Image (cartoon, rainbow, N blue to C red; front, top):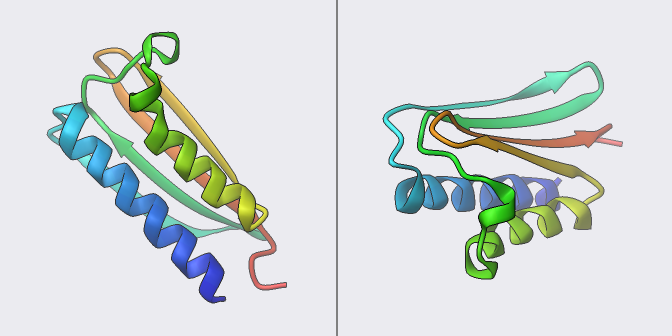
Length: 98
């Protein structure tokens, strides 16, 4: 569906912009596929990572925007990051074609 396609595109775009601007990553892994009845988009980098508690409001705007896009279409977005180990972003949408 067009709304799902647009959300995946924009979440991916924002994630890559954050990686380019902030992560200093040397590797990025992207996967998109079905896990059972759930569509899953995973974006992982090996960059410098961050601590959620140390984010400034400006830093979190991109993450907040991705979470809002996911929520609008009934999906979820999980972000995990460890300083000096990278960041993992996972978008999930159950039954995306129902």
